[in-house]
Image (tube, rainbow, N blue to C red; front, side):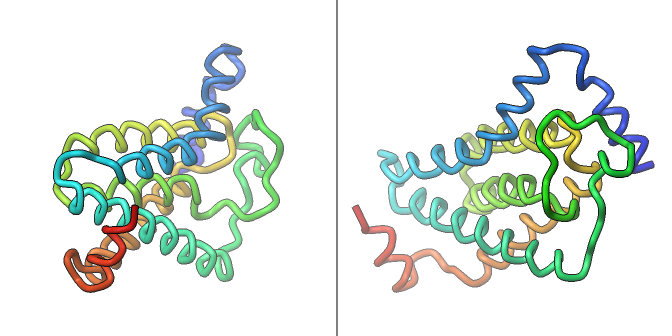
Length: 180
């Protein structure tokens, strides 16, 4: 089922040069663009310190999620779908294992961090960006669908851990949110 879904999504690759280039661009600049959008929230005019707490939570969730992925990669060695003949690859091959998707982890960690701070408009914008990134990873042939789902779960777990461990209005938070 995983290979069939991955192949179905990737089957659009190569049909339209514009679509392929768009998906490659989203895959390459999507996460840095999300990070930029979060960073720009630092200077929000309304509810400034709460939004800053969300920005810090998103950054910590992002980093923790990627750290969890590195631990997973020590034990899970899944080949890429293009190596298994499931997808048509549109970019240079990756040198690491397929599971989980770091792009999905990063995007969903950021979205979950903002969602847990009850910032619905910002969360919706970030969610659209994260879903586009996840879809692009499948379109370009670099991941299986379950790699993206696994990465999303890792991002969510990281955001939950940050939510539990990094409290708003704690001494550290009060110090950090007043920077700049």
